[in-house]
Image 1 (tube, rainbow, N blue to C red):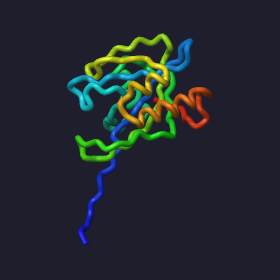
Image 2: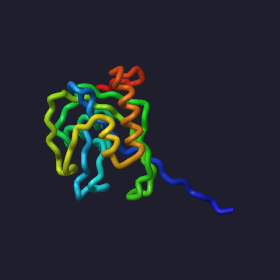
Image 3: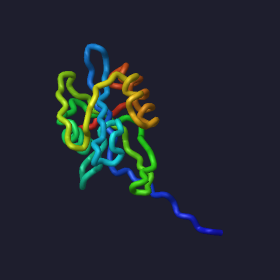
Image 4: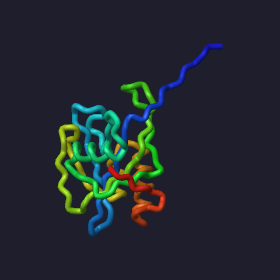
Length: 158
C-alpha cells in the first residue's frame, strides 16, 4: 500500500470585516484587489499576514491601517474561520474572521494593494464578494450586528 502525505494546513494571518454604522444601519467595507496582487480584481475583506511576534489584534490594526488608513474603534474575535485552498502555496489556509468597527465618518485611504473600495449594506456586499465563504460570513456577522456587540464575540485589545 502506498503511503500518502497530507496537504499542509496553515494559518498565516487574518480576514477582517471592517464595518461601520450609519443612519441606514451597518455597512461592510469591501476592497478590490489591485492588479499586482494575488486574486487581482476580486472583492473581499481586509486580509493580512502575521509578522514576527504580532498578536492577532496587532495584525488587524496594522493591516487595516496599511490597506485603508483606518483605525478600528473596537476589534472583535468571532467564532468564524475563513478557510480555503491556496494554490499559490499548495496549502489549506485557515484565517480567523475578525470584525473591526470604525467610525461612521471615517475616510478610507487605499494602499496600492487595492484599487477600489465600497461601503455596502449586507445584501449588496454579498453580491459583490467573490467567495461563498465571505457571503456566509456577511450573513453571520449581519445577524450578530443586530445585537451589537454579539454575545458570542470577544473584544480583543491591541
